[in-house]
Amino acid sequence: MNPRSCVNIHKEWDIVGARQLGREMAKEIGFGTVDQARIATAVSELARNIYLYAKNGQVCFEYIYTNSQKGILMTAVDTGPGIKDISRVMQDGYTTSGGLGAGLPGVKRLMDEFDIESAAGEGTKIKAIKWIR
Amino acid sequence: MRIPILKLHNYLLISIQTEIDDQTAIKFQEDLLAKIHKTGATGVVIDLTSVDIIDSFIAKVLGDVVSMSDLMGARVVLTGIQPAVAMTLIDLGIHLQNVPTALDLEQGLVKLHQELGG
Image 1 (tube, rainbow over the protein chains, first blue to last red):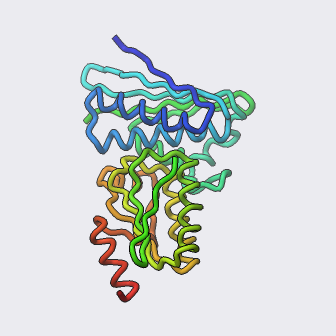
Image 2: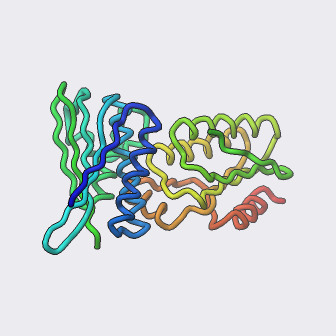
Image 3: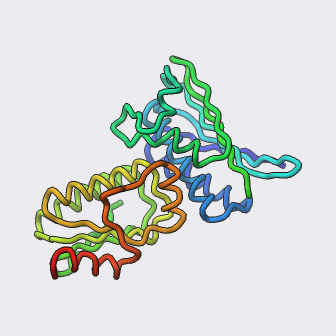
């Protein structure tokens, strides 16, 4: 059984809803407090990006299992304007919203695996995994 | 949702007990500056003991409110940042340098007392 739970992001409060779900699911599968905070924070950053730049999108969570590990996979998908220059948004301190520019590079550091696909005009899809240690 | 701000002599005390969304954070920033202006408070303690997540937006709002209060002449100390929150902030690359902090509310008040000369 590998249920997938999603939160639609279209208003600001959905950012809170997404991080609460992420934290609950992380706790459920056995992550410690620090990793729960890391996961919830990563969700918050991804959900806020959707809300700020794409207006509409979805953040989904599912458990993943390999022979030796288990973890959580989060997927953040939107059909917004997309990102023209991915290497630029992955730089620390780069921001177009007046924020700290910590978002995406921060998420990459908080999680164990990070993958981003984006095409201008089509949207963005980010996948990030955290494994239980 | 509004975060309550308590006045104690020359100080303002805030204990953030709720899950903070962006609007609540922005509203709090405005409320705190208005309260400093109204009361003439010289010191502020913002206790974060019950906060279990600070993302880049909330961190920016908190860092900004410290600088803004400083401009108005009030010293702000953040207290009670949880270990998990501290680790997450550093992972995010947020160091909150120049933001005075203390272990807990009590230490925060001691710090203000020292800096403001009683």
